[in-house]
Length: 263
Image (cartoon, rainbow, N blue to C red; front, side, top):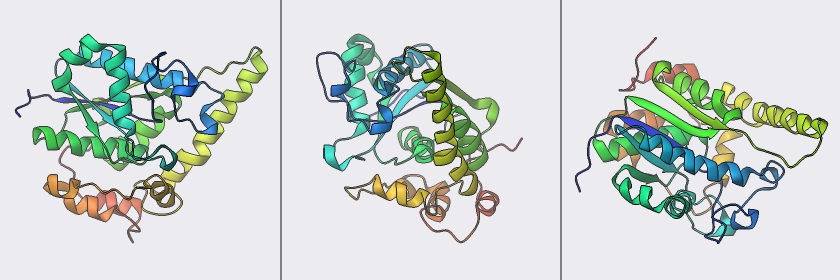
């Protein structure tokens, strides 16, 4: 199959599995949610992420949308998060989804936010045999710094001026300002403690606790083939697979990445 050449990548990271239902994602019961996703009505953000991603695609004929999420939930069975988002998008905007069908793809192996961007870059190469010139991430606003500064720019050396972010925020059903303030304060603390601070020490997720977290998100023991399909970065992908003896800065210096422009 021949695809129209595109230059830009829209990254849609998945956070759950949508089960097709009559409300098209409005009801919490249609989603496989973790406890920490309940108070903020995160499922409504997920639905909005899908809508925002298709709008980004419609506004740029040089863009391709890739939805990233694997079989991460043992209780839900071997169901791809990315496929469930694809199905939701096609139900929400069937005409748009059909019209842009040759510009929407899935990535099936990412287990955390770093792999969301790295594996989508690899998937883009599988499709077009070259790497994207620009990247737009659609996701939570409170994760902006993690995706742009830590993953794409610091770890992957992607030029900052070629990175864009489209974010939204959870909307907890609290009636008073104090409860809402406490919710967002706790959200910032949790993002720092359980994500940003860990990636500050381990940019590539090679070591525990990030490595253990990734392993837990692969209950069906699936493995990707990006080292084969992306030969120019195969040594880099092998190096960051697990327990590399080099520290993060040494890994960054040791491997040339074809999309990188130092600035």
